[in-house]
Amino acid sequence: MTYKDLADLIFPNIDKTPEDYEKIYPERNLKEGAKVVRYAPSPTGFMHIGNMMSATINYVLAKSSGGVFFLRNEDTDQARTVEGAVDFIHHILNHYNIMPDEYEYQGKVVGEYGPYIQSERIEIYHAFVKYLISIGRAYPCFLTPDELTEIRDYQQKSKKRIGIYGKYAKCRDLTPDEAAKRIKNGEKFVIRFKSQGDFNRKFVFEDLTQGKIEFPENDLDVPIMKSGDLLPTYHFAHLVDDHLMRTTHVVRGNEWMSSVPLHYELFKTFGYKMPKYIHTSLILKKDGDTIRKISKRKDPEALMFYYEEKGYPIMAVIDAVLTIANSNYEEWRGNNPDKPFYEFPFSPKKMSPSGALFDLDKLDNISKNYIAKMKATELYQEYKNWAEKYNKEVYDIISKNETDTIKFLNIERNGKKPRKDYENYAGIFDKSWYMYDEAWNRDIEYHLGKITDKDEIIKIMEEYLDNYYNEEDLEEEWFNKIKELCTKMGYQENMKVYKENPNNYKGSIADFTMVMRVVLTTLDMTPNLYDIMQILGKERMKKRLEIFKLKY
Ligand code: GLU
Image 1 (tube, rainbow, N blue to C red):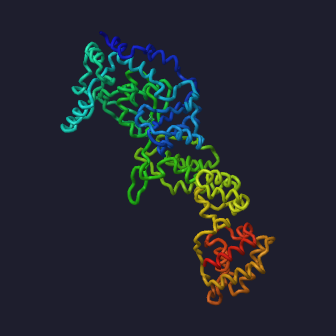
Image 2 (cartoon, rainbow, N blue to C red; image 1 turned 90 degrees about the horizontal axis):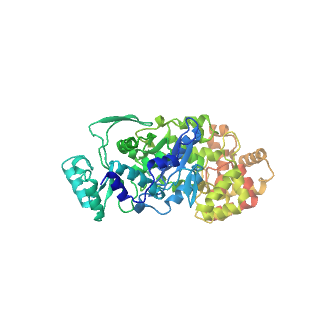
Image 3 (tube, rainbow, N blue to C red; image 1 turned 180 degrees about the vertical axis):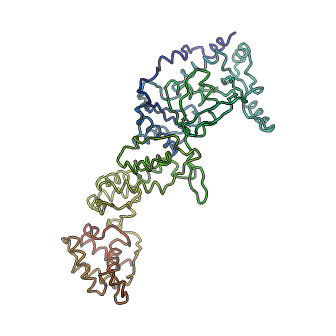
């Protein structure tokens, strides 16, 4: 029996060869320099910030080079597949407008290089495994789980390198006849790669992020096809898929760096050109005085749900992610505030090899700027869309009060330096609830300034509302009237004069207007008081005063 016979015995129904697939998936016809990249998540968990960074980098690399971005569902670990994970990936890519050019979803295949779901590519993998067996470069291995544990324990105890190599590769030298006999006897097996590397020899690998790295050659006979579902391992699928899909650049987590020697040998065995690699940095978080890896369990912001629940504008999240991906993104964005993010010349070298610090304060800052630049109507729409999904109560209130909400959001928005009040949509209501009559039915705490005497406050407000306030007044006139009343009641309208002799007055104009602000809003800091009064109108202001009388 030859290796070829053994290969036929294991895969009797596979008649295609790697060469056939070479023709089915020819080189892509793209212009010079165009990058073919992929986002290749395993649906074993929900998309996290590290995945988002990979997806975004891929999108940028493809768009900025006139290349192709495809999505590949790496579902070979079927036991660990999490329900909803794939839907969530599509949702996120859609939500952030970083959709791949090629993908497969809900029965729809877009692109000529599919299937894009690994479990649907099993025949292709088998053709490649079959070929390796037929040339004696892969073999069935019958080591049982108990035997493997025994080998591992022994290696650990005697401080040997862990893995199946050298004398531990017990099935490596079985003849095709011996192997065939055991298969026919129904023994379980995996297919292992038959490495020809030498651990004492080195080779140099060039990672686009980390630069040149010297590795020892691979000499491990790793499994390339599992028993049971007969699916390939990650390593083998990486070889087959990224070759046939004509990937030019692999963007993947740093945890795969240690597999480079194996991948190097696999590509070499088939004579295929290796793609270029960008191993991305770990995402770190500041936790008190220490810096640690961001954790899906401990840090809610690690998972992509967080940003939608809080209502961050999509561009703020993209900018924050690219800011951690490339140290010069922030500067570029500053110089090119209106350019699409994918025109950014992403440079793998400018990715920190040791890890990138993700900081929510930074995101908040970026986000405040985006929200400040939106038109009030646009912000209202985004805010309402968010509320519809995440806060029904707020949704009802702001839908009922659409005009007032837009007017409120518009306060001090159109000048050169618009207000930067909100970091996300979830934070708006907490800073605007007082504009809605529906929301005053709650425990109220008044953040008064210098003037705290209840009778005095009521006197100021009554006098003002009954005899001075006029909805028709423009801001200047409005302010003159306040000044007039302020003086009449023993306050000083001029701050400078006040500061010279503060004891001569009950307080300053600032103390005086503070009284109004607090009664109307409970807060000592709000957007422009004139605008707030314009929106509320006299009757509602009177109502606020009644509430003050009751609750203060
Ligand atoms: N499925 C792998 C993962 O989720 C992909 C790694 C790669 O991009 O090659 O980590």
